[in-house]
Length: 183
Image (cartoon, rainbow, N blue to C red):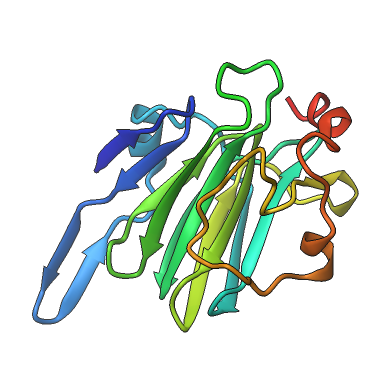
């Protein structure tokens, strides 16, 4: 596999080796030894799978006291996936990295604990799968408003479909007290 570092510490793009022919393809979606050799040392404890329609935006989410690392991929369709540095003590605080993940490019995106994460569907539908390093705890959940001007994320959609929860998330400035407990 090919591991591509980004400007955010620990956030990496993973391009698996894909073996394909006229019958289809095969790829190894996870091998603990390979991922540890690539620098991803965390243990994964929960797998999730979501399906969303075009222009659905989920995020930007994080957990405060038990931050989750996420190894994400798309098995059907295409999404624009984003990681945001929410550590107020980091040199890259408020910076983000975005990548297109699709069933065709087979790329994965590793977002370590301590980052906010979100994605928007850019195909008609998308199946989004991810491994988490910590169990989901709704009482520990936090979030940042998707279109916070301080973040200036270049989302490929103007009017996304949002849940009420995501529509009403605070800006990063309003959430500062939540952020100091998530690092």
